[in-house]
Image (cartoon, rainbow, N blue to C red; front, side):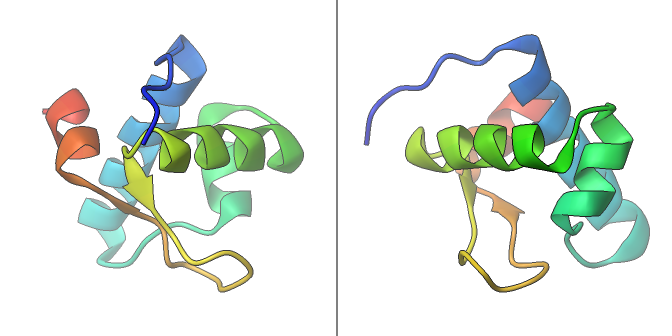
Length: 78
């Protein structure tokens, strides 16, 4: 696992995942996430991939609503 730089956009993605999951009880879709952080879906997907590589989130590619924070990701939004 490489350590990924937590840019403002990536921190915003982590917060949006946590807020959506807490509010609705299930993880956001990429489209929901992109809308919440004000980025395009492709850009949001890129940031999710970098966050996954850094160990901040886990998800199953090509399956909807599988995004979740890891302990490292939860520590950032706490």
